[in-house]
Length: 153
Image (cartoon, rainbow, N blue to C red; front, side, top):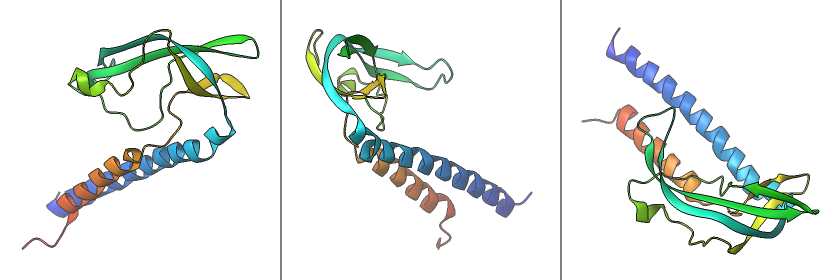
């Protein structure tokens, strides 16, 4: 197996991962530009807020500090509880102070959006963060240029 065959295999894996990334990014963009516009907003109460150490149960390399926000809210006299904060790109950081995006206190009132057809679905962050698109796109562009740029001297 020659170097060209190996690079072709790497290119195929690269293209497949890029297509999967595009699917997830467009799903997130669709959520923030179409779906959430149909949702309603209401007041919620923060019942738990902490920045805590996270370690993935499936990936031993995935660990760091992460915000944990739990809140409850009432829709049509039914109380719901959720911890969904965002669908945007999130980074688990090795520094506790960098993990703190919000500055909530327990019992604080916050505004959330919820799905009127299924009120148990709710979210705090109601806007698309451009970094959700920019960071992975920059990664793919730089990786492509580094691995597959044939303009080497």
